[in-house]
Image (cartoon, rainbow, N blue to C red; front, side, top):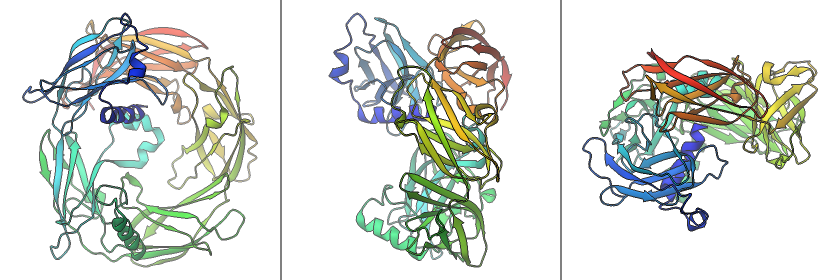
Length: 558
């Protein structure tokens, strides 16, 4: 959820300078809650001109209300006729880290609650200068290498791992930002938060990134991908394996140098063929080879199948990979993947076979009136077991509520349902007699799967409350609700939010059930312990509305 909000906010900050008239005209002077303040530098307290400030409605649909403005030469801004409500409140400027309302440094901030006719004056943002990683990439002869993708990767935070659940164990590093080297072999990755980064270079850049967005560059990439790169991806300070890499530490406003000398290594070819579900050659299938546990934008090799269902991937350095195949056949989507260990010899006649998994038929029913079109809903099965090569699958629901998920391999899966209207939730999901929300969807060879029945409801509950810190409102505390007990199959019912300027929080649409509610508050210093609350257990019924009070008390060292 937080990633979605940040994406909307980024779009708002980049695109809006003031709220459209069509929205402002609907707000009366009495109801309007104007917001004003200043944006300054954190280090010097100097005003920042042309900073972008935005309020983005909390708990909205994919089209939240956005109110925005830019600062003047004195760093001041004013947003008039803001509708009452709860908002994510941000400020941003090129060269600085975006900051949330009431945040300390680059930490998470608070939501802003606006009552009718009661705005906020003198809101203050102190933006921290972003860090930069720059350097030069050369070959063995010291010649500059152009159009090389350089990526700054970081370890996911504890909060991200908690949100990701099962995926957290499979992704050691995630990409923060990237750049492409110029004709001098030079690159510059900017906009980085203070912290540790693993910097990686890969010759196989992706068309569409800065520096590769014209026809000649796209053609060059196509030629290289077919010939096969002879340069292995390299982690700083020049090693091939992640466990040998050294992180670079970036402080606020600091520019760190990371130089690379890429070297040729013996690469191999992977050849094989893809078999369609009907046993024929899978033409027009897509095959992707990637490194597991590192989620970045480079270091991926791909190929399509020909009329015989055959494919060739060239220029593969030694290492451990996941080989994934996909094919669309009408409204059916087939996928398969397997682990591949690459040594010094070519791999020939590897086989990817679609249709080896089960077909799961299902039906979605709305138990409450007023449901939106069912064909907007997408059903997804996400691996919840330990295997790296476990299957996965998904399907779009048809207007009548039916769906079909093809090629689901043996394994354990958690059910995810996307595209529901605000306030709707999955009240029941059963495969035969099995409760999928509690025990997951277990697909085993030889088992009879039956039909997956999913029931949706709008009878959601609301939970609100306050967080206090030594008898004072805990502003910007992170509040989490988790099912009790939490399993790998019901994590989709977990949710999180921030307290507002009064230390209050609201969860508007929770599925009825038993929950564990906790709060935590970080200080501005990364060395200081995290303050946590004791857990409160609440049981919510349909259309329920409850309140809970949380007290921060326990320092927790991470």
